[in-house]
Length: 315
Image 1 (cartoon, one colour):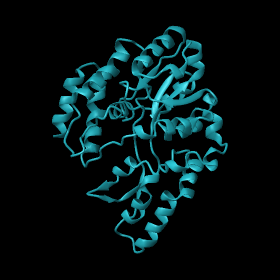
Image 2 (cartoon, rainbow, N blue to C red):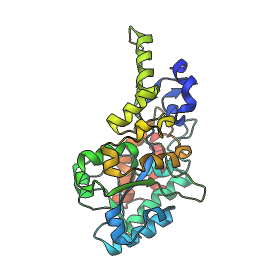
Image 3 (spheres, helix red, strand yellow):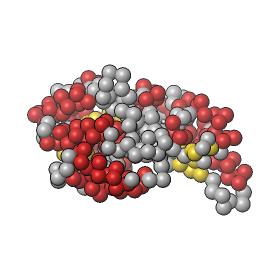
């Protein structure tokens, strides 16, 4: 797709194309940016006496969580053990990953060990977090828990907005979106997470027609506006984010307020994408099957031990 992608790449969040490229060739076109953000339940935060705009760092997040636990019946947040959306964005916003850009295993590096320890301590030391009900943020148990005001904050990509509108209707008007807390003064406040890419396969009998359609659907201004209006995804073409068509009222603005894209614009240059290799599925399986459970649920291994084991298994 190089002939279609390269002329317009400056209008897009370029990092989102990296996960569908290899050896200088672009094979897939993204459906969304997948910018990870913080979803705050303002009803809980207000009751706890916390201004969500005062949460700039993860230390601020912990301090806010202590107020939430002390003054409400909710906890601050939960962490997944059966899906990928807690640990991965938290390490990615620090410039880390499971694999480096050359495909070498770095899952057990210092940043990742410290991050998993940080998550553990929020559960067992500060006692402001817990394991996600049902194990992940797409379980029926979690939808009910979150909808009933069980937790005050959730870190998920912007495409998760549709889960709120579809499964947590009682939170309409109570959830506001802000950048993720950062780890350092100049740290990133987001990370690219997930990805839905569309490709033209080599089985097609109409390659040019398929390419033309894919380019229209996902590389054009009209296509990106439709991605937002119909799906509620953060369109990868950043040049449409301030357009009148994007800012027209819809169910997502009615649910989350009018500053959705203001937050996205604020973190536009801080959205690094994940490194994808052939071993990613195996790594994910090891983390979900053993690592998170042994550290966060069972406490049978330290983060260093568990991540060393993951690295050894995948190696």
